[in-house]
Every structure is written in structure tokens, then in C-alpha cells.
Picture 1 (cartoon, rainbow, N blue to C red):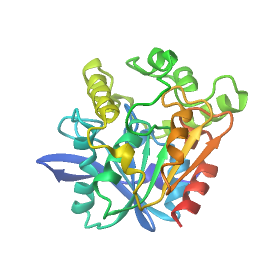
Picture 2 (picture 1 turned 45 degrees about the vertical axis):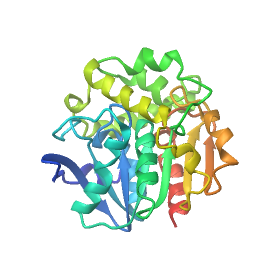
Picture 3 (picture 1 turned 135 degrees about the vertical axis):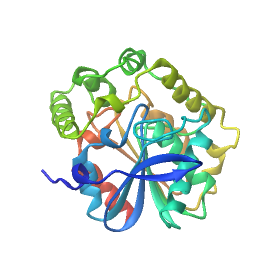
Picture 4 (picture 1 turned 180 degrees about the vertical axis):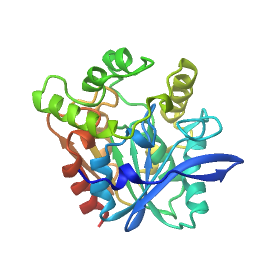
Length: 277
């Protein structure tokens, strides 16, 4: 197994008087990774990260008040998104790419629409567009996602397709790769923190800044990657938008759930590398 991501050093940037934890590794145009609900730097699959680090400079970070970062997670996703350009400024980066998964996909869209002069390309994995979406989260998401600690059995449902033996096997392999460095004590586990994430997701549903409409005029390319059965952010919620988002492409992986990049790390990284080129 490659080990670039597993050996990357944690550093700290002072942003708004708080220390924000980040890691930087790889070669190429900067690519900021924006974390899922309860995600930290170490909940990304290292094989996925290493496969992208060959052609991109990977920048991982923890949100304010999450993981190894100081501060408090803002209740508004637009406020959460300000961490990305602030960290880019700290690192002396002008233009960059952004990749967000799940809740992080909502944050990444806010980054893109608020920084159209700086974001070159946007990659959105297992997430939904801003505004009202027709298909809600499935109950099975809440049954597993809100436990204080998630185990492999929870991950089958949360990120994979439990009805598929191939998907379950991929879940075990990804879980083991992530486990090499993961410190479970850093993963958010309290109802109070969960509510801050949920409040943020609500602000994107309200879409007061009309990001959904802005897809019609967005100039930079957007790649959406989904599993065909996402219990959190239904893949089908993108379909009404596709004809009104001229720079968007959508890839759907079969027999996959909310985390297609963990089920198919090298394949997904290959699609992303091709898109970013």
C-alpha cells in the first residue's frame, strides 16, 4: 500500500485567532478536500488520497471546532466555507480546485459560488445541490449516522451498498486502510455538534444566496460523482439541475452508496484526474 497520505505531517494555520489543522502533500494544482458530516482529515481513504496526490497537491483540513482544529463549527455553511479561501491565503495560494464529500459537498459549492475568481474546478461526491430537493434522506441514514461511534456495520449502510457483496467487501478494505491512522477520539460524537452540522445543511436548503440558480451562469467546470443508491443525498436530486448547469458532468457508479470514492478509490481518482486535466 502507498503511504504518502498516512505519513503526511499535521500542521496548523492561525485563522480568525484559532488554530486550524491541515496537511499538504502531493504535486500539482492545489486541491482542497472538504470533509463529510463527522469527517476529519483521517476519515478519507488513504488509497484515494494517494491516487490523487500523484497529479495534485492535496490539502486536507479539519473544520473549526472539529478534529484537531480549534474554534467552533459555524451554524451557516457559507461561514464554514470561508475556511477554504482563508487557508489558501495562509498558504499563499491564489487559484485552486475544491473537492467536497457529503456535507462537505455543500460547503464546497458555497466555496465555488463565493470565490468564482479563484476556484478552477469543483468535484462533488455523494452530495446534493443547494435549495429544495425532492427526495429526502432515508431513515436508515439517521439510524446509523447519529450513533456516538460508528463501526464497520454502520459503514456498510452509511457509505456503501449493503445489498451488494462486492460493496461490502470494498467497505471492509477501505475501513482497514483508514484504520491505519484514524484516532476515533477526534471524530465528533455529541448531539450538540451534530446539531451544528444539521443547522448548516438547513442553510443550504434555504439557499438565500440563490446558488442553485447560479449554476446557469457558472463558468468553471463541475464534476458530480454519485453512487446509484445514496441514502443521504439521493443521486436523483441532481437530475432536474443537469439541463440548467452547462458546466456540470455527472458520473454514477453502479452498486454503490454514499461513498463511491471509498468503494472504488483508484477508479474514482482516475475520473477526477482526467476531469482536472
